[in-house]
Amino acid sequence: MTKNWITRAETSADIPAVRAVELAAFPTAQEADIVDALRADAAAWIEGLSLVATDEHGRLVGHALLTRSHIGDVPALCLGPVAVHPRWQRSGAGSAAVRAALRAAGDRGERHVVVLGHPAYYPRFGFTRASAHGIRVTFEVPDEALMALSLDAGHPLPAGTVRYAAPFGI
Image 1 (cartoon, rainbow, N blue to C red):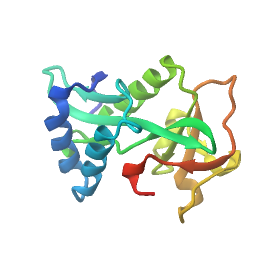
Image 2: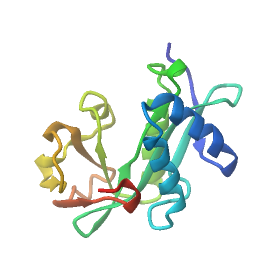
Image 3: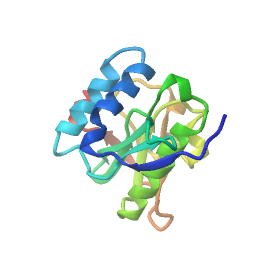
């Protein structure tokens, strides 16, 4: 069931509902803890790049977060944990939140985004294998799981090693 989700930037009033969605969506609280840690880290948190998807009644059902990272020395964003309440998974709520986050990032002049995620999901947003651009990480990960996206066609993806925000622990 695909709906027309309402997307907007997270507000401080949304924090409990975001955490509830994450706890319902993820197998452990560790992923939700990462979002809380990113929110608390001034170097990682970017106001306006944590987006929520709500239904027509304002109930928060999905969340996507972009946080500061680097590819080599070039500033980039990392798409953090994307969560959708299990009741609304496969309804388009996650895609709506991701698209809104990428749009907001592009509107702010951000140029590059990396994601470590499912290779069948993220290409729909334009992500491609990061290794094809010379982008790598310092830990073991399947090649197809690390993907990158240029939000600005005039600035191709840089090559280099991804440096994640400290709360990711990598």
